[in-house]
Image (tube, rainbow, N blue to C red; front, side, top):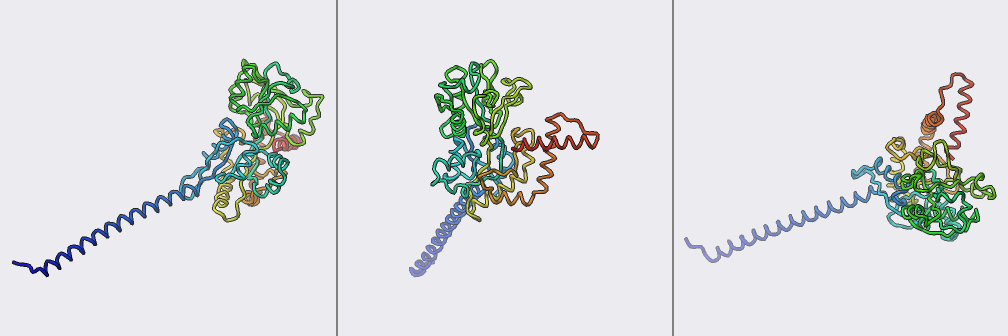
Length: 391
């Protein structure tokens, strides 16, 4: 059977049409698949960033780093609407506060109470309204001022003209140590080694002493032994009778280092008087309803709601010093934190008092009172203890 040329042309045209249809259908499917993959990629990237909260701390051996790790372990929820804590290693001190203020990807940081005052003194124009930009969520713990010296150095006065390490430049240790040594009118040869390097130089005799301001026990110092030939210097009127310490205690809390903190360096029953600063969880105050503000609202509510989980023995012992309701002079409370506290004030007060009372009974080894007079006396003693604890 013969097919006309016209029929051949029509058949060929139909064939080309079908082939083109198949080609365009395949291209459309490939394009749709590529668009779907791109959309999934972008959605995954958005979800990863939406739940991430970056908190800047100091070095790995700092108490603040362990606190950030504990927050990660308790609060992390990697679901699309969850929360992910990302600790970032910084310098500490004034630099941490500057990083919260200026670095794009830093949401929060562990800073010390006096940081804002020092920055305002350095540059009143630049930092004039800093309390509106950086605010605090809560007081975390007390950072003890710890001066580790060779055994031949008995008091702060023995450090005159000696080599003393002030930790890294602009760290919290350096900032506070500068203030304290100036008040004591002690001229020393300063250095800025990191903690690990400074410890070795004190042990070798190259340095007379080193300073660390952080929550005790500090991990590196806790590894030292009496055979290392080092001890802690006391900062109190008894050891420094010729100095006026009031200007120092006007800004810092009285504190002490104990045997429980450093059993190899402090004898059982002995204490080393010193001072302490309050470590705060500071946050950048983003504009209301911005994505980052909403993320920090979620963090604050989750953190406060789960605060009891941080008192687990597996967490750092300094969590017992956290005071969610403590007011910090010169600082403004982050509004979501203030709102949560207002909503839970009665419950928090009852829970906090019961927890403190249990801690008081344990730490003082008190027996259960039998008479009303004994109960009244014990309660008065508890209130005095509690006031000192939450300073």
